[in-house]
Image 1 (cartoon, rainbow, N blue to C red):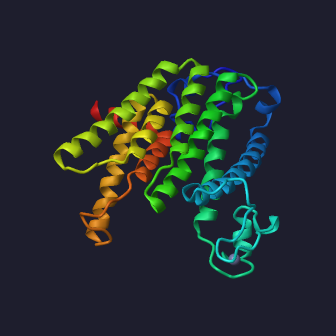
Image 2: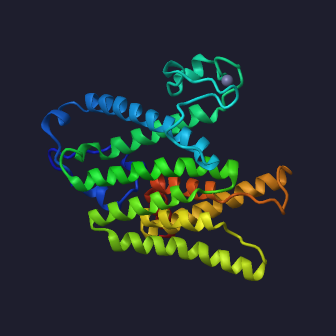
Image 3: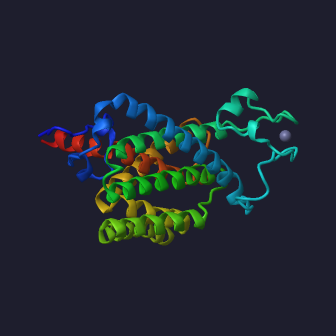
Amino acid sequence: MKRAGDFSCPFHFIFSLSPDFLDTSIKIPYKFRQNKINLMIMLFILSVIIGLAIGSFLNVVIYRLPRGESLITPPSHCPNCKSRILWYDNLPILSYLLLKGRCRKCKKPIPWRYPMVEGICALFFFLLFWHYSPSISINLFFILALIKALLFVSILIPVFFIDIEHQIIPDSLSYTLFASVVSISGFQGYLIPSLKGAAVGAGIFLLIFYLSLIFLHQPGMGIGDIKIAAGIGAFFGWEMALLAFFLSFFTGAVIAGVFLLLHLKQMKDRIPFGPFLVVGAFITLFFGKNIINLYFSLLW
Ligand SMILES: [Zn+2]
């Protein structure tokens, strides 16, 4: 039942971060309740600016981490002509459009991945900020939940692109995800559910790893997949993690089928599984609860 002062998030229908959050009536400051439009505009600007800035940094991570380069020095430069990229050519999305997707000096095309990562990051940050915003001024628990979700997407976006390009998932990303998710969950009082989720995640993929070693005489999973699955399990808890992994296998099978049909890949080719883990995790993050509800409504 709705009470006076309840704030309903317009994205409730797509969110499933934690079932309890959505049913909690949250008292929000009077002035915010007065004008939802202002709040939305303010949040939109704030979260998009932060999301674009983080997205810009994630591009540095995606390029430099698998190449073993420092994330901090040297400052941004064109990988082709090595010329320094000045701040006005380094503005997220905007500079890409102004430069028509080419380096100012050598005119070599800038990969479309750059504006895409910035755009995805800004969108996800906006959705997450909006979802948690009504409670930010009230409850440390929700602030932690927001930080946990922002870290989750900020680590999985680079995992997606690095695994596609290099077929590796850097340990630094898996360990950071696992350590941050488990410790924040601990502060929230969710340490045991989080560890259970990690155990289920790592367990399923370890099992696949060993079974395929025994029966197919080759590893069916990378060690990197096992480590990142532990972090995804720790984030969702084991029930939602199972949905995330199921969606990963499902999208993986569909995409692999399409590749085989179109002769883009052959049976012997390895397709990295990390990107599908990320896709499954993001679908679960934003739509998981709806999928579960739909599933049960079809059963009964
Ligand atoms: Zn250049």
